[in-house]
Length: 74
Image (cartoon, rainbow, N blue to C red):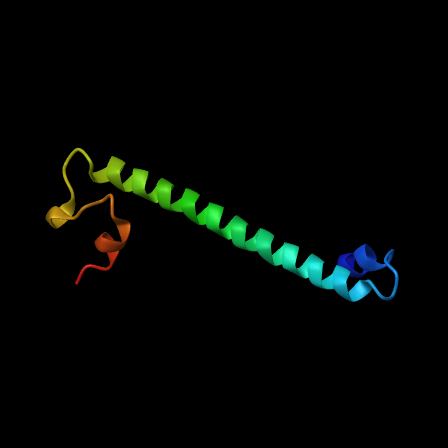
């Protein structure tokens, strides 16, 4: 409903361009938002792990700075 109301003020010839531009900007915003949230979450997890194991040392000699190596070690 909101998308239709946003393009309602455009002429009929411009509504397709307005609709595609609106979809592109929405997708771009979601991509940037998910990326920023992922970075914040990764940094929070890293600092929590270092805080939990930092004084004692990492279990089995794992490097807590590299999260992927910690969780995916075989």
